[in-house]
Length: 413
Image (cartoon, rainbow, N blue to C red):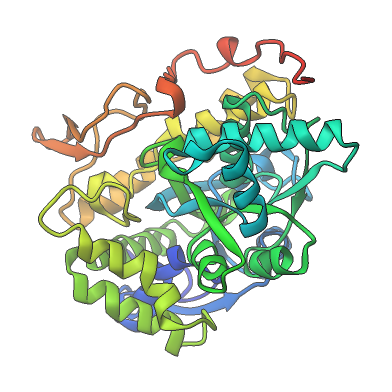
């Protein structure tokens, strides 16, 4: 292995279940075995993580998949070219609504308990009733303006005829404060990652009405982000960091006991100040329930080729930026995605560990309701999970933008 340019790294993260690969890599010695001395820094919000990496207070970060793109384009904070060469996990998000709001939805549409999209339709009826009564719009929160949560929430609302820019008020709230905000009555619901939806349920203040999986099966959820300039100056250190986290992801998906051990690491290490039951609900319990069957809805760290940095996933989010009028230059969007998402760097790290990678950098979405295989670069094949989209949608990464900028109809009812 080539000499590392530096051994000490500072890595920012948020207290979430999908930060497990970082904690596991530290606890199980994967960082150390790659010659790295890594300091994990837990931040209070995605804005704090953004600032830490943009201001060079850390060398790498646990990021939302849209954050490197937004930083490179200068949409979020100072313009900072960033790249990602590793997806840390698939799935894990959900939409939760306050218990009183959910009960009102069930009153207006009793079958609202049957399906996530029926629940969105029930929410639309509540919104219409509130408008007729002259009440203020419902307040829904996401974790960051440039987040998967923001655009998954918009997709769910829009599919039921709810205009997220007119019919509700969207706010940004750090994930650890979501349940508190619902309990205090400051927001009526939120989209966040595990374990913060489970906390709302545990405290009896919220009901999970739609998992992110129902909107997009096996969506990429977190990535490892670094500044482009840092990666160029520290290629061997970056390679070692990727190797350690790839190993941690495979360790997490290898055994149910490993998942349970990761829950303990997150809690006992002080990364998540929550009851074990809340953390285990998503990270371990579902994994155990899925043994012996295809537990696609689980958080995946390595299974289904989860670690591959698909440009398609970032293109889908870029298409949402374009579709909702948050960035209108499709050429710059496409160029930035190619610059930010680096499967070539991932392949080098994976191959050094004897792990095959996908031959392609793009994959279609919405065409596979079941797990399916694709060609690997070693002549074999790799298993991917289902990639269904809400309402049977399709996404073609070769033409992501033209069909995405349809005129939004008025949602006034």
